[in-house]
Length: 638
Image (cartoon, rainbow, N blue to C red; front, side, top):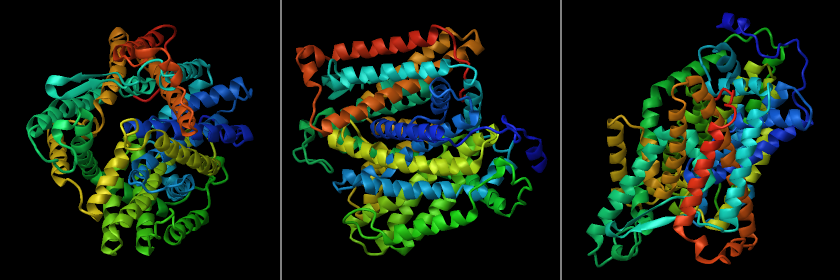
């Protein structure tokens, strides 16, 4: 291993002096951390999916540094990308857990969300530091960190020209304009839907730009699985429930309404979501079980890193790290804060044992998360399974302590929220430290800059959560918050037992059957859990990508360049949609309804066919942009 380490030469040699932490690079990094945290919170609460931030941030950062600030330092661009990526990491941790508290009707302030997020992000960052030399340097060539390599290639190639930057900005502008005209001014319907009366169900599309972008990014492999789950729910289970329950003279638990009087969306909300939750939980546990050997091995191997002989080249910037005294002090501080400080008004302190469990799970799964990111990338890291396992243990301990179940379930979510943010952050930090090593940057500067971005982004993300709740209501069709809904059900199930376990178990069995068939459980389970309109829109974007691939199938190099161009354009679409969506939520929160303008045009603005045609026109625009002009030369992940 040492031989490999000494042979490796970073892009910027150690004897080259180059600016890295400047007011501009830190400022841009924090700005992008806020943007990607906010946009991923918005997207995640709507769809259950998030998009990677490091690659578009690397392109945007390089483009702005060169075009606006006349800077040509790849180390500054790397810092921008690293700080931006932590915004995505904390967003993923937040949307998994904390919205559950709001759905229960409890007041959770922006400061409370930010504190929980900062605590999780701090220990998620700190717990990677003792293992950085081992995981990043000693294991170089063993742990591949595929997404770090992709970000590194972007940073190197982005210095060659600004085409990728222009493509992202084009998508950003179109995504924002589409959202403002539809969701803002209300010129056409964002939710074209048609009733299928004979089956007692419905079909439609969420006609928003971000879902087309997400579909293009994930491709038909994931999109078809999601749509399959949606078809099973909306054209299988809903008609079945409607048919069997039509003659029922009393409501059937958990609904308080007669099935004969329920719409398709009401049946989905009262029954199907529990089945979907069971399937999602099964997917998380099966993912965790399959990963168990790798988890155990990763932890053992990472622990060896503490005993590994340290390099003699600490003087080089590549090996300058945050001192371990800060790591210990930070872990102790987080433990004491979680133990002694009420993290939300009206919720008692979680206690010594639960605080210890928070630190333990954050450390154990944080180390695992960092190493598994090196194996499979942060996007494929089984954060959900690790969070579910942590939540179940924490909730069980709280129940055994005799705490009131109504308070206990919230305490469990708060504790699991710290752990979840920590796990997600550890993977993201490891990924950023790897491309920092490849580029030739300074780990300590990246670590401290990422924490600065994390603190600011935590408040922004908390604000977005609360704005979306006030504007649309978390748990509603507009913002279903799927993962948080699952965590809510699990916490309730442990603490109170008041949950329709039959429906959940049906979902678990479906997940097991899907696994036996050799299919990926989580996309199908998400399709079951989410409205069919979401899956249909995502599939539309994936089909656009499929058509592009077919057009260039005879030229693999050209095909790859076109798909990469489409991914950059789609990243911009998602960000533009999300940013304007957040802006519109601000207007709604302030009592300003811009859609009154659209209502002046009468029925055309609510006509489902009109909304569908304009949505398809956007899909055609994406296709035309991807196949025209030059293909991208940015090397994105396979």
